[in-house]
Structure formats: C-alpha cells, structure tokens
Length: 325
Image (tube, rainbow, N blue to C red):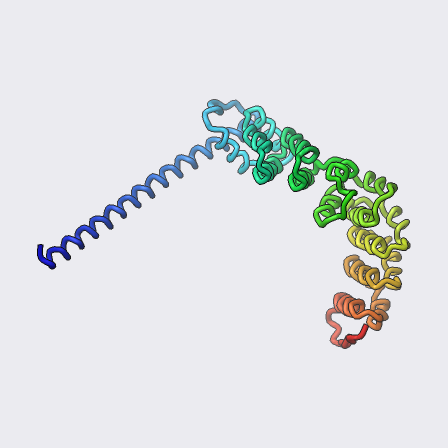
C-alpha cells in the first residue's frame, strides 16, 4: 500500500469514527429527551393526583409510582400550599409511606447522612417529621446534629420551650455562640412569658445578656417592664442588650431610656444608644448627638456624625472628626 493510499484509508477511518461518535451522541440525546418527557409526564400526573386528593376528589392508581418519585413531587408541591392544604398533603404523604426513607436515613450511623435527613424533615414538617426532629435534638450522640435538629424545629416554629431547649443542648454549661443567639431569638416570639421566667434563674452573665437581647424579638410589648428593670444594671453588656431589645421592639415609650444611654459612662453603651436612636428614628436626639461629636472616644464621635447625617442628609456643613481618644 502506497503512502497516498494509507493517508486516504486513515482519513476514511477517522471520518467513519467521527460519524459513529456523532450518531451515538444523537441517539443518547434522543433517549435523554424521551426519558425527560416521560419523567415530566409522570411528575405532572403525580402532582395532579396529590392535589386532587388534598381537595378530596376521587383518584385512581395512586400506588403505581415509586416512593422516591412521589417524595420528589411532594417537595415541589409543598411551597405552593399553605395552612390546612399543606397539613392534609403531609398527612396523605405519611399514609402513603412516602416519608419512610427520610425517617430511615435519619437513623444512619453517619453524621453527615443524619444532617441531610434533618434538612428533608424540616422541609416536609409533618407531625411525624417534627416528632423525629425532637427525638434527634434530645438524644442524638452528636452535638452538631442536635443543633441542626433544633434549627429545623425553629424553622417550623416547633422548638420546645426555651428552658427545655437550653437543657437539651447542654447550653448553660458552656459559653454561648452565634447559633445560640439565633435559637433564642427564634424561641422568643413563641414563648415570650417563658423567656421572662428564665431571667429569674441564677444564670451566667453571658446567657442573661443573650436572653435580654432575645426579648426584643418577642414582638410583645409586655416585656418592656422587664427590660426597664435591667436598664440601670451594673453590667454594661446587659445595658447594651436592653438597648438592642428596645430598638428591635420599636415602641415609642422607649425613647427616654434610649436617650439616657447617650450619657452612659461606658462607650459601648453610648454606641448602642446611638444605633437604637437611628433605628427608632428619634429626631429629638439630634442636640445630644451634636454633643457627642466632642466625645472622648473616637468611635462614639464617628457614630454620632453618621447618625446626624442620617437625620439630616441634605446638610452640607461637615465637621472633621478628630483622631484622638
């Protein structure tokens, strides 16, 4: 075979291989599209089936789909439903055994698998799921898993009472974290009275500060009297927590307490008072903010200047804040 013939043969083989590969890719694309069309048709049928059952209509052949397919369909339907319809859907899912796999993997020996199961349990939020989340929060051997379960319960507004939550997480025997702050703030709107009762306990100062801070998230103006009792506490961090809570509650009666914080001997409290004044929109504090532009602490002077700009953004008269202090 001559060199020319070898080149021709090689080119032909290369072209043939390219055509074969192209045909394989086209065939795979055809199968993928056909499979996708079949899945879309199936998912539409499952969705229609569950919506009809939720509405109380008669349906047939609802057992012909796999539990995994039905579970995926329910995950897509859930965000579209509210109130009683959502509750009925989850009751039907439990009766169908759709959640069995999720509940099963929540008992896995692997921590990561249990955490993934918690995310599914949180999303479904049925009575069975909430019960399993409470069990994991109370008894799981991993502190991380217990915390994840607690946050899942908080997302479903199903946290146990705050005292029980702190005990289950063994929280009071360690320093609080940002996660603890988030949990207390989540529990506060559900259990405002019990949050107040916690303050009667002999708590570590770090936890007392967090609970006072969380009272601002209760949306319950009944806690104002409790906050007033801590407004003059000797601990400056507690005074700061009171100001954060007052700013979050946003009640006009807090104006006098917040204003008094501008004269606090502790710079952190003065800073927190400035932030609360901006948050509450107390324009009557402008003269005091002008005074704080001469404060001995640089950060207080800077925050006062920023607050004044907030209340009067069109004022072109600027003042240079010194760098001493």
